[in-house]
Length: 171
Image (cartoon, rainbow, N blue to C red; front, top):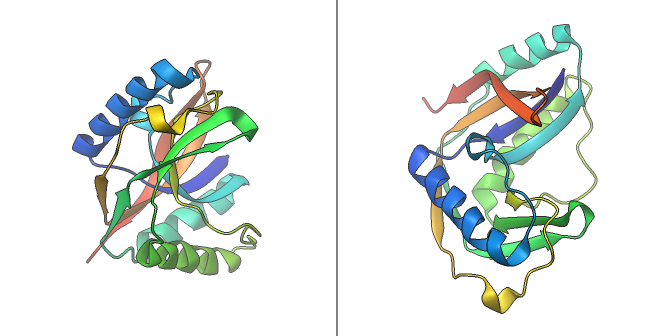
């Protein structure tokens, strides 16, 4: 089972992100993720056994994810995969803290945190050309979060489908 932990935008923000992805696709090419699949990955785990997935689902239900806000105001591009993404110009200490606490909890289950620093971002396009930055629209979107979701990524013939296995919300 291929698993990851993520934050999911509410419907209104997801619609804005989908519209933005469509808009920039005209100048960058590439392909958009499925509309319902737009998310922020906090921890990618890769392949795990069904028994381990069950343990992680239990851990997720007990994990406290404090409510917070993340401002999306900066585009970026990863050459590998041609990923055009949206993130923050300024650091987001509260989001960094949630991600660090999650990885701390995951070490008890045998997972090792990544060596790269956490760069919170939302993928808007894959296989996109590097954009002309001056041609991209100004963006300032607020993402209010309070729920961490454990996701099972399933290959379904049209790409990948994301099924929620467990989630937690603020008290």
